[in-house]
Every structure is written in structure tokens, then in C-alpha cells.
View 1 (cartoon, helix red, strand yellow):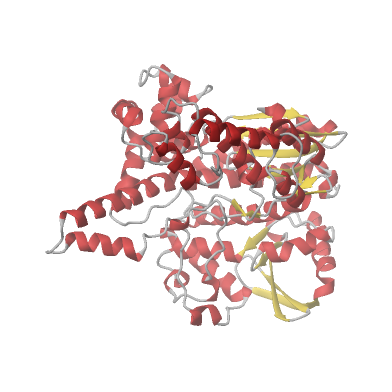
View 2 (cartoon, rainbow, N blue to C red):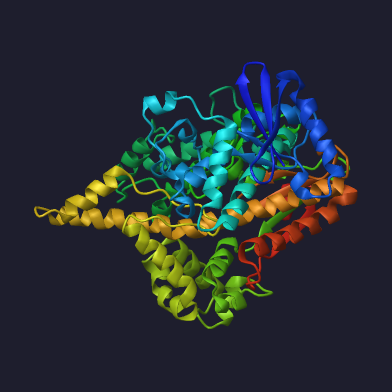
Amino acid sequence: MHLVLDRPSPGSVLATRVAGDGTVIGEQTIPAGELAAFVAAEEADKGEKTDKADRPRWVWSDTRSWYPPLLAAGVRVERCDDLQLSHTILRLSTLSAGSALATAPLGAWDAQPAFAEEQPASHTALFDLDEQAHGEQAPSALEEFQAQRAAVSGSTAPGRLRLLLAAESAGALIAVEMRAAGLPYSAERHDALLTGLFGPRPPANGRPGVLEDLAAELRAALESPDLNPDSPPEVLKALKRAGLMVTSTRSWELREIDHPAIAPLLRYKKLSRLLSANGWTWLDTWVQDGRFHPDYVPGGVVTGRWATRGGGALQLPRQVRGAVVADPGWKLVVADAAQLEPRILTGLAGDQAMAAAGRGKDLYEGIVASGAVEERSQAKVAMLGAMYGATTGESGRLMPRLTRAFPRAIRLVEEAARAGERGEVVTSRLGRSSPRPGGSWAQTQAAASAPDSTEADERRARSQARDWGRFTRNFVVQGSAAEWALCWMADLRQRLTALGGDAPLLQSPHLVYFLHDEVIVHAPAELAEQAAAAVVASAEAAGRLLFGTFPVEFPVTAAVVDTYAEAK
């Protein structure tokens, strides 16, 4: 049974009950202040319902808006449908392209998502709504829900889409719960780690002693006493004045140069980035009462990967992971999936040879054992090149050998790349489709085909086509990997809830961190090993959900530790 929540007027919530066949079977208006009690009662009643279809699945516009107040009141929700996240998927998916929802004019439910800091800007503009569309009255939650049901049931693969929407919505619940719970974090340890790297904390806007010493060494080496090492243009000019043939201050380019200024410059750049991203200001802003509370954004990247709003949770550097510390009497279960994207590609392509290479062992070692390459490092470079479109250097040299050994896998990504180069859409395992390239891309391609086109027009068009082909090549893999991770976490959330029994969220094992192919669970010490087993079992379940009986394995290592740093 679905319970659709809407806000028809300030101060009240309309709850509409919808049967499994879509029939509305009742509705009631609830004062907003009584919503938590209403939801709690419905969730409590689910234990008496043996038929899962009779248990409540909450339907609301946006989990980020509806769930936090419920969670703050001590009410956890087992299942939901997030209409905003689902609408974006169904609007773009090739599987539901013929539906009324997908073909309707853009409206209020198509408001551009607020993509977060980790997302490249060139891929964020899914929809370009005009002011009138933004100002239109949105269809009610019930109307939108019915439109989405029709889009899924009439799609070319209803089962895949249902699983994707359920996993996406479960991810939204998890994101809210992880923000509320927070990642256990020691401000004292973080401060000590920073002090060990930089020296004592400087005054506001001051430069730490270690950076001052490196700046002085750099100025002396470049004979530039007034150099500001935080200004790339100034540093570049100073390097050129010293006779160094450089075109940028990028680290990979600087490492090729033999000069006394390079070592302190590289060290300064590395420490400065850490200070800027996770220094004392970050500590003051984001860590409160022993917890780091990042704001996760499910579906924040067009491939379905998560992003964050502030705090940089998806880029927590190794230097500070020792500050992630379990509470007394608790443990951290740190788990990551080995070679997730290559294994996803194996399942997508149905490549039996690659599945065999990864069965029961490290996939890259298995590729070496197959005779495709001589060393593990070569296998990794070749696979990354296949998935990300590297055609030069070591990766390009190894690609023909990889193609001969695993033709089905390589064919899949090559076909995805060619589709992107033609401006076509590609689709992930469960049904998330890539956006089409923007108007400027189409204009560039058209200009190259015009009777009066120039060689420069053609070069520009080929370059843009290749760039978009690299995006679609990786989209099918990264998007499907994001789906696997959502299924992994959704199943794990259920298992952890069962381990905790009737205990509240913060008193039972619960997810506290997620990074693409890695999770951290905070668990009472006596349940930590069971939580670790649940992590592994959920990974196996996620593989079956996406690929059925195809024999691709998703091995997960789960370490029970006291600090995040101990797991690495």
C-alpha cells in the first residue's frame, strides 16, 4: 500500500491511501504537527501485515524535505518513493521515452536539480526551464505518482525501472539518516594531525609555520623574494624567469623538472590543498559534538553518483582519516568493493572470459593470468583506459591485447562511445539514461557538415564528438556501478535494522559514510562482526539483483576497526 503525502495548505498534510493496483482507497487530512505520530503509527502497524504489499510505502515530493523532521522526532521510515528523483530518471530514460510523462511539456516537476560541488558543470544542465515553467503550479503528489506509475508500467522494461526507482528512493532515506547520525569524528585528533603536518594553528588568515618555511625556501630557490606561492600566475612567471620551460603549475608537469624549487613547490601545493579543504576552518565548520554531518545529494551527478553540498565528504583525504574514530564500546566496519567498475562492465557485457578472470581472485591478477598483459599494473591501466577512453600512451598500446582477450566487454564500451560521438543517448543497467549534448555541441557538428565548413570546423567537431563519446563510454559503466551501490546500501540498511531490533537508529548498527564503492557502518562492538557479515551478504545480493545468475562476483572486504585509518 502506498501512502501519498502532500501539503494542500500551510499547516496540514493530505495523506492518500493507494492500493497496489493504483486505486485510491481513502484519504485524510492531518495537522502538520501530528504527522510524525501518524507516520509512527503506520510504521508500527506494518509488523502485523504479513503481505509486504500491505505495508506502507510513503510517497512524497522530496525525501530531503519530508524525512528529516520525522527522523528528528524519532520516526524511521522503511520504504518510500521520492517523486522528484524518480521524475528526473523517468523523464530522461530511453525505457520510458514514449510515456506521457516523458513527452509532456516541461513543468514544475522538471526544475533543474541543484547539482553539487563534485559534478562537472558541462553535464549538469539536464533541463533548461523558462520562467513560466518554473512558476507553474505543480501537479499534486498524487497526480505525479499516478503519472510515474503509468510511465513505468508502459515502459519497455518495467522491472528494471521499478528496481531503479526503489533503489534511488532508498538511497534518499539513507542519505538523510547518515546526515542525521553523522560520522564519528574526533576534533582533538584532527587538530593533532594538522599540528603534526603544519605546526601550531596560526592566527586567523595566517599561514602555518611549515608553509611559511616552504614559501621562504621557494622564494630563495627562484630568487623571487615577494612571490606569493598561493598565486599560480605569479608562480608560473617566477618559474619562467628562472629559465624553466613550463606551461602551467600542474603537479604532473612540475615533476618532470629538475630544479631546487620543485620539491618545496610540490610540497607546498599538497599541504596547501589539504589546509584549504580540511584545515582548521573546515574542522570548526563541519565537526560538532563529535560528529561530521555532511549533506549528501543522491543523484547529484548525472550518472546517478552521489555528490555533497559542502564539507567535501566524498573527498576525505587519507591524512585526516585517523580522526574518524568509533565511540567507546562501538566499532567501525569499513568496507569497499574491489574493482567495482570493471566487474560491472563484466556483467553488463556478459563477458564470460572476464568473469572467469575475476572469479575468486583479484580481477587484475586474473587478467594477467589470462595472458592479456604481463603485469597487474598493466591490467589496471588497460581497464581504466577502456572505461574512460584513454587511447594514447600505455593504455592505448595495451588496448588491442585487452580487446582480443575480452571482446564482449570492450565492444560494449566502444559501442557506447560511438553512440555518444553521434549525439545519441546511452542507458545504464537499470534504466538511467545519459543527457543529450547541449545546443552548442549540435551547432558545432552542423557547422562541420555545412558546404562552407573549414578544416578548423571539422577538427573542432571531431574533438567535441570524441569528448562526448568518452562521457557516454563511461556513463554506462559508472551509472550501473552507482545502481549496484544503491542496491548494496538499500539491502544493507534492512539487514542492519534487523540486527538492531527495535532500538533507535543511533543505538543500533547504522550507516555513517558512503563513497561510491565504500561504506562505513558504526556498530556496537558486540554486533560488529555480524554487521561486517551483513555488508558482504548485501554485496552478493546487489549483484544478483542487477545481473541475475550471471557469474560475475563482487568481492567486498570488511574491516572491523576503531579508526578509519586502520582499515587502509
